Image (cartoon, rainbow, N blue to C red; front, side):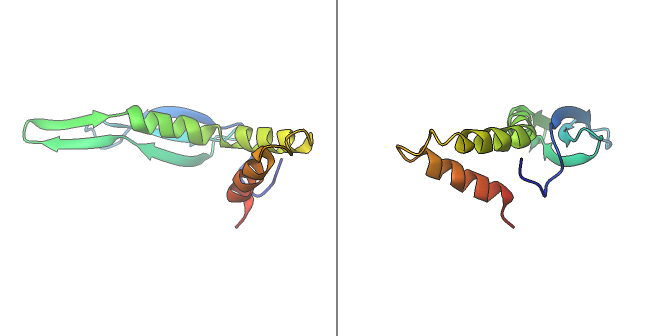
Length: 102
């Protein structure tokens, strides 16, 4: 697996916000319990109160938490040499570059 990022596998966990509004965020956590990223709920402000929508935040957090595993799968698939036909190898190389280049 490519280096330079916090080692995976990462987990997505829901956590209550500390401001007592009833909202939540999603923390992406590394194996050593470091927070790698956070995804916040969508907040709808209205006269009758605050409404939180967690669906996008949860989906984003789960996608982000899968990133190290997806990167490794892409690298492994490319290493087989079986994907050189049909442009899939180029797509994998582009995705790997996007994840690893600084």
